[in-house]
Structure formats: C-alpha cells, structure tokens
Length: 304
Figure 1 (cartoon, rainbow, N blue to C red):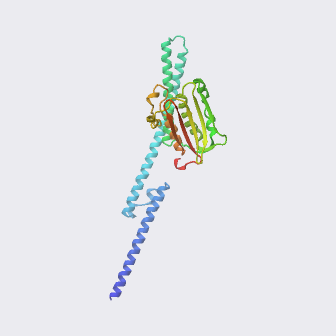
Figure 2 (figure 1 turned 180 degrees about the horizontal axis):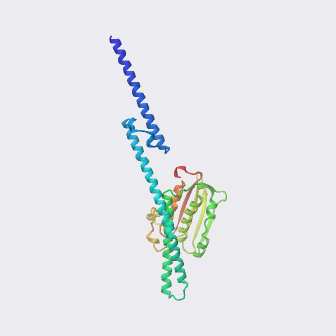
Figure 3 (figure 1 turned 120 degrees about the vertical axis):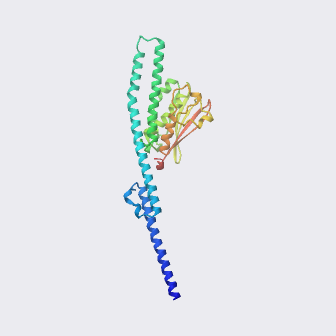
C-alpha cells in the first residue's frame, strides 16, 4: 500500500509540475506577444482581455496601454506644435516684409532729416534681426520636434562648398575667404541641412574676423569621417565660453555689440547630431578659432 501511495504522490507531483509549466509557458507567450506587438506598433486593446489574464499579464497590459496613450499624446502635441510653427512662420512673414519695404521707401524720401533717417536705419536693422530670429526658431523647432527629417546620403563635400556663397561678404569686409577640398571627397550627410550648418559656422567666422584677416574652409579624409575645418584669424573664444557657444541664445559679453541672436551654432550642432556627425572647436583669445565638423562616411541610423 505504501508503494502505491508513494507512486500516486509522484504522479500528482509530476502532473502539478506539468500544469505549472504549461500555465507559465502560456503566460510568458502572451506577455511576449504583447511586447512584440508593442514594439511593432500593433498593440491594441482587442488583442488581450484582462478577464482571461493573470495578475502579471493584467499589469503588463495596463503598462503597455499607458505607453500607447502617452505615445498618442506625443503625436497630438507634435502636430499641434507643427501647426503653431507653421502659423508663426506664415503670419509674421508678410508684416515683417511690409515693415522693411516701408522703411526703405521712407529712407529714400528727401523730406526727412538725418536724425529721422538714422532712426529708420535702426528700425530696418532690428526688423532684419527679428526676421532672422523667427526663421532660425522655426527651423530649430522643426528639427527638435521631428517635423523636418534630416536624411543622410552619399554626397560630395564640394557640393557643400558650392552651396555656400560668402565671397561678397568677405570682399566687403576685406577678408580672404578660401575653400579647399579634394574633388572626390565624399561622406554621408543631408546636403541641404549640412550646407546650412556649415554656412552658419562660416558666417560666424566672417562676422568676428577683422579686415585683413582670413577664413579658410578645408576638408580632410579619415577612415570613418570626413572633417571640415573652418579656420579664422578672428577675435577667438575664451576657454570659459568655448563650452557655452553651442547653447541656444548664448552670446559672449565680448560680442554683444555684434549682430546676431545666438542660434546659428546651436542649429548647426542640432543638424550635425541628427545625421550622425558632430562639431568641435579649438580657439584662443585674439588668435582665431577652428571649428571642425565631422561627417560620417556611413550614415549612423541610430541618429536618424
């Protein structure tokens, strides 16, 4: 009798273990299916019902449902920002253009004294500054919120240089502007946005370089990157400011009298980081600066 009783206990134990194994496997498979659907963006309430799920499955379902709700909220907020940015861009374009036209027309009048014309020039200058600021903020907002995609693909470095025309600005200031790159040098980048990023850096170099100075834009080939250097003989940057110049709206006290709003370098960094590149600067006060842009030879998909 004891032997039969012992066998019965073993059989019960085996069936209990088998039942637990099957139930655990079923739960894990359902959780795995939940996670897989969530990763693929196919998770929906109809896929699982709490009535037939274990407590763990129910908690997992609520967690995924909350994540989906948050994702939908982010999409709605992004669309709202997109509409707001579009409205700001559209609604301010015409008034600012009209102000510039009116000030130019008034400035051509012979009935104004010198003081009035000086005031008109100040109005025109501040309107230009406001127009540039709005355009820069719109671009930055679109990039930060993913409204505009930066799509890297293989391009020639010379295409960037050909898209940038600052010769007239350099000539007016008496600065030597030189571009130097091998014709077959290529990397992976978004041509339109990268041209804007490098353009912002060159604009800064020209702005803070005095008459008789030089700005040299060159490119070098490395195993994984192509490096574009923008070297100037300008006023330079202090060690303290070097860590801050890529912050949005930051302007050093030394350049507070110059035109600018402090978003050009920030925008350049945002563009480059989104396509898998980055930017560095080395500088010494009164000795000039070198801004180095690194563009990958293969697009970094994790940044896109």
